[in-house]
Length: 339
Image (cartoon, rainbow, N blue to C red; front, side, top):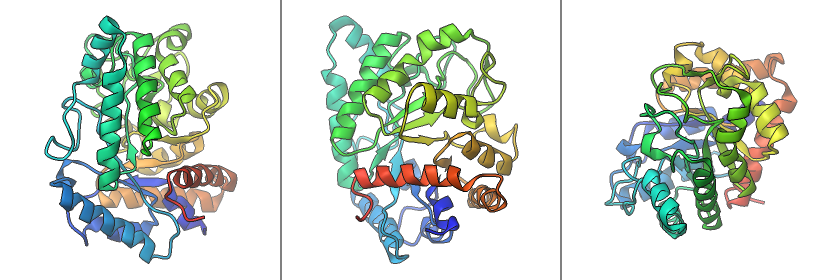
């Protein structure tokens, strides 16, 4: 791979369109994209979605590439889904699963959901679910995570998150534990503003990190970052923070898989950093995949910024190669890379 192709592997984008020939194909070719994310407007029916995703993968192959696209989606459960009930079976919220588990100790409902979700994903051509949410909701006013979480109890969240990951990945779909290091202790929605949490490190370690430790032990192949500041650790959002991503997640917790950002168009990032500096800072912090869910101009701008920084040495060649190596290893594991 040349440098442009390597940088392209490190970007996942959202797009408009439902049919072959949509703008995604142009961006895949132009940016050498490694992945795409689907949203509700992209997903109208089973056959439409199969046709669209085959076309996107054919576009990748027609450019002479030996890898396939990562195709991701947020299919969490309850109302927090992209695929409607006409495409994928409906399931309770994670919170309901957590409440049930605390009464019965039964993990099978979560396992059945993960298995059924994986089957639909595989049939459609989706190979990555941006789930499960393993945040522990410790703030009663937390509406952005809310019932997306398995609960306010660390042990429950850890257990059910790990079960979901095991089943989903055993069934051939990449799981993504999110949002590291935890989006549970705030009432600020990072889509709208940058949350800052003033919490002792001991509480972070005792309450919010254990579900991620459990997810790593379960073998999660991806972890998504949180656009949040924990002031006792750093004044930089975790997505852009080397202390969190390289020192803690990689070093102390031993995570060897792929780190993906939450959407970089969320206002927690977009209102506080330029697009260019955010993209470069995320990669230097240890991010492998930069997720940009909308706006082709911004997607191009952020990709160009990382390319420019790599060409100038502001991002080292070794840093780029580490990420590309992890992405390709994950693709190979899931049959998305020719030998």
